[in-house]
Image 1 (cartoon, rainbow, N blue to C red):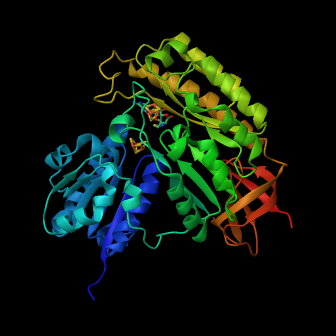
Image 2 (cartoon, rainbow, N blue to C red):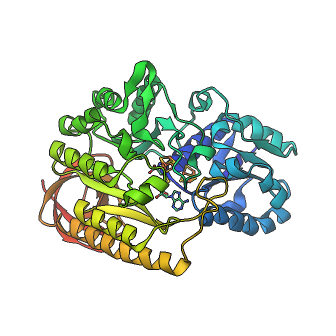
Image 3 (cartoon, rainbow, N blue to C red):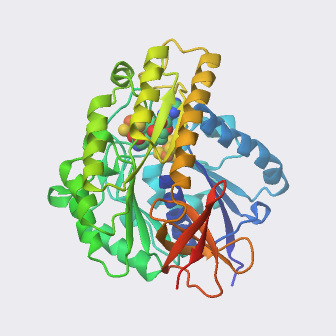
Length: 437
Ligand code: SAH
Ligand code: SF4
Ligand code: F3S
């Protein structure tokens, strides 16, 4: 028997890419590729890339630059670029970086085993089609590379919102929801492989629309019936699609975890309008009020963009005001990055010093809120989903319902079990806990 070919995958960007990388690894596993963590051992290197901000795209070119020497020393090595840069730049990538053998967009991953075969024979390939079939249905499932208590499951892809700054509608295409039967089947498979928590993924997950008009809240109600599935999360949601039944689900379904990522981007109506966000600051705050009425302990997180073209100090102040009003458990914030092909690209940009000053001020407020939220956990008794051994011996690490990492000493504990623990201390990025018997 020939020695198995080795596959090395590097993933950039969002959780959707993490999920896709796992599925690609499995699919290539079926055609004889074994995953390796050592890049020098690889016969095929796949970079699963992100195009969301300029820096994200540059990372891929830097990595390819580093791989040049490896390719030179091993000419049989094949290099593939997948993900959102592949979709956005297509053949341009091979033109700029001739060491690349294969460019494959996110909607063509089910072609990957065939494309890899052709690349092995020396072909240069660009596949950035948007085929009609559900790629996940056509991606062969193999033995999973890793079985973890917490798993991702993509249920919806693409975006029809067209925020004026964002590449996603172009790189991932228009909104497509997977059929509920496939999702339920995959959830059961994941549970059989040891998952206890499932995070439903979609670029616009709460715009999910399954067969017969099934909504996300209805899908969650179905999934909550599955024995062995203890925790359900979903991300990322758009404020406009946070409907009343989904909010009600947070009150009714104990398995639905009390944290929600609901990006607002800005607190200024003027900026939100220029961003084409299709919601205002007021309507966002009303949604949060309803969520908190349904589930008083719900923790909110968000994404922010500062320095969007036309943002004035008063607009930025409105963003700070909104943060103070909401009180976030966690948030990501970014300086606006113009993306070629998006409607906002080409608009007059805010000077870099002003952007970084605003980012700095926003981030100090957000980290203070994050710290306060984390410290408020001390003294509480919480259910912790045990995920893996900790850094020190005799230590285990798990996750609270609010996504904090907690570590504690334990002589025996099973990965994937949910145990009650008392939080005794808040460290920099983690909580220290004590198991209660
Ligand atoms: N679907 C998600 C967003 C995915 S992108 C949503 O609608 O919220 C993740 C985050 O990246 C966005 O929420 C936004 O804050 C940020 N982002 C997207 N495009 C950007 C750009 N051009 N410049 C800076 N940040 C950007
Ligand atoms: Fe991008 Fe807006 Fe779609 Fe989110 S909703 S993916 S920010 S276009
Ligand atoms: Fe990046 Fe594409 Fe995700 S641009 S954030 S990898 S959808």
